[in-house]
Image 1 (cartoon, helix red, strand yellow):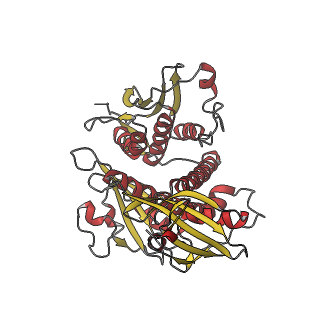
Image 2: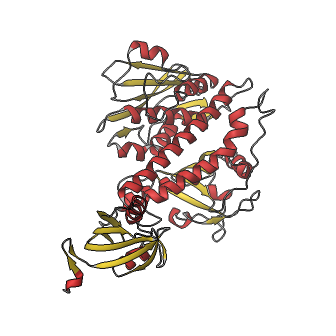
Length: 464
C-alpha cells in the first residue's frame, strides 16, 4: 500500500468529488459502480441516498463529516465508511471511501413477493370483482367513470365467467387457466386507455384456488377531470360521493402505489430509513382513501331515496368470500379465520354486494382489535324467518356502555391512531336495516365480541 493511500484515519480505498449542487463529478471504483447500480451516472446527481444526505449536510454546515453508510447494488447489501470534506470555496466536497463490505441479499420469499405485488396492484385498480373458483362473477365494484358501463354489465351478469365481459385480446372468451389470464390485455369500449387483468387467487395449502380477486388496472393515467366548482355542490347533491371522491380517489391511489413501489424497493436499492418514510406516506394515503370511501357510503345510506337490490343469496358463500378477501391481513397478525365449511349453506334475501361490505367491515374490525395468534369464527344460524351470520373474535371485548354507543356515527370508543373513521359500524347497521335486517353486538370485557347480522331468510330454506 502506498503512503498516499494511508493516513491517521485509515486506508483510502477510493476518492470522489461533488459540486455545489451535489452532483458527483468524478469517482473511483467501487463508488462509481455503486452510483450506477443505484440508477445514477458519473457525472450526475448522487444516487446513493445516505451518501447524498451526508454530502448535503457537510456542504451546508461547511464541516467535515464521517459516517458509515448502507446501500444495495441490486445483488448485495453494502456497508461503507465515508469521509466528506467540504471545499473552502463552497464549490463542493471531497469524498473519501475508507471501508467497503458486501453481503448477499437474502433470497426473497415467493409469498412475500406475491403479497408485495398484490398490495401495489390493489392501490391502482379502478375496478374490482370477486370471482368463484370457476372464475364466475360474484360481485363488482368500480368508481371510475370510464368503467361504469362495464361494471354495470358485469353486475348484471352475476354467475357468468368474467371473460364474457372482459375478453383477453389474445385469447378470446374460451376457458383458460387463471395463470394465462393474469396480466392479459383487454379493451374497454368506453375507454381509450389500455387495460390489463390482475388475478389474485385465494390460495389454500395443497388445493386449487377457492376464488379470485380480479383487478382491472391501466398503466396510463386517467383523464384529468376539472375539480367541481364549490358553488352548487350542495343543495341535494352528494358533496363527497358525486363530486370530490371521483376527483381525489385516483390521484391519492397513485401516490399510495408509488410510495409502495419505493417502500418495497421495486424502484431500486434504498436504505431502511427511506423505505420507512415511503411506508408512512403509503399509510397516510390509505387513511385518506378509507375516509373518502366511508364518507361516500355515509352519503349513500343517509340519502332519502336509498334502497338495496334484494336477491336470493347464500350467506355461507358470502362469508367465505369475505374471509378469503381478508385472509392476507389476518395472516399478517397470525390470526386464523374459521369460516363456514364448503358444504354449508344458508339462504337469505338480501343484496350480495351490501352483505359482503358488512361482513368485510365486521371481519376487518375483528382482525384490527384481536391479539396475535387468536381466532375469528364466522358461524351461521337460521332463526325462524331470520338468517344469521355471527362474527366472533377473541379481542378485548366491549363494556355495556361501549355496546350502547358502538353503532353511533363517528364513534371510535376513545381509540386514536388506528386509522378508523368511526363510520364503519354505523354504515353497516344502516345497510342491514335497509335490507330488512339488523346488526347487533354481544360482548363482555376481556372475552371478545360477537356481532350478529340478521337478514330475511329465503322462504323454505334451512341451514345445513
